[in-house]
Image 1 (cartoon, rainbow, N blue to C red):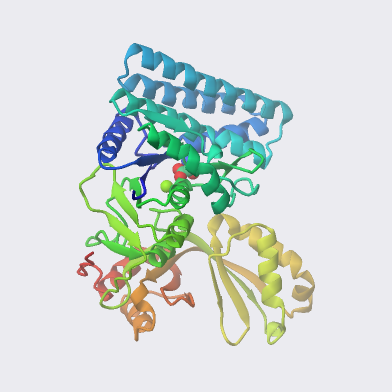
Image 2 (tube, protein in one colour):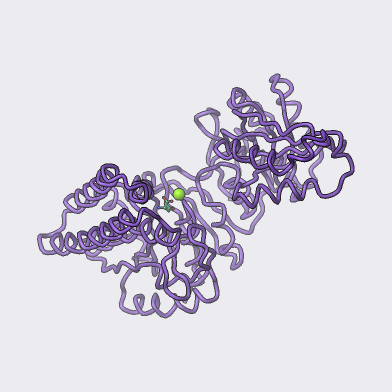
Length: 474
Ligand code: ASP
Ligand code: MG
């Protein structure tokens, strides 16, 4: 027997009772063909509200906490009323959801009392969004004659104890998940699994990082040797560029795992960047599908490589980044400066998105998200205080309101003139390039430009690589 399909639905896809019923319809149809495992996110806005509630509780802000909690009650209880269940099913579901909300409230009240929110408590609190949404969808499925069971992924996915950003242990998860899921398949039932969360080997709830329900889906795909993982979202698939900026941007039919990973890392919001890792290990194809346009074929992500004419296949843009530059003639040939810079930044938990060092070695530049910029500068000024006084390092400077434009494509590897094509396009559009980096994979060339030039840069590179015309077929 071939493996099941994993169908993952995001927060907007389960954002209201109507939408949950739409999802139930899509799942019921797929179940006629083969075994299905459903993975879902919390209803949209819920995870943000849970994060906020945790903060308000820790800050002893009772009014803020009450506001957040009220929102959580309203959104979930209204969804139950809209599900069109019979009276008994609705009453049963209301009791379950109210019990979850009461448990959540108890946890939040203890945090309010303590005035402290540990990473471990944070993970438990934010997991409630998915714990509740799976119960709504499982009931909606059961109501249309497709028996389904909600499952908290802590029973399936074993992770490290890095709360907030836990790493899955794939082999242990496989051993744990298989018998539980097989048992449900035997009974003809659909498991509806919480995205986002897992648990340590000791059973303590963890989360895999914001937006990680996609990752949960491919982790389960790995564990169950799935035939495919379908990521159902609110767009038709991965596009050549942001259609808000580029009018002839269109859905890409096929991407390799590496292309999809590069694109999601640099701002294409469709997928969590780690989603491709478990799928690629077992060569399981991932499909990006649109819940609101289910007949659109979407984007297939697999191990196959479909190169495009000029090598570049898509443009991804990351806005609101800052360029930090450590500069000084005294750095020339001094070993260890780069190590110190990045060591300090890493210790402060700041993510570096891009690095560039000119061969003159007079400066090291790197990019961080806007909100990390000020902190990075402070840390480096402190760490290099001595050098700054002696003037071996002249300055730690920051430039804000920048964006990274990344041109991505497998075909760029070894393809002559790719960088030239980008520079010519931007030069003709009179766009100033502040820094450049090419990953050694050669699948990605990234440029730093001013935020003011973003639309123009996207349009001119899209045109230069004929991305609007390229029909990438399967
Ligand atoms: N609900 C989680 C979040 O908002 C996970 C996800 O949606 O993928 O980050
Ligand atoms: Mg998402």
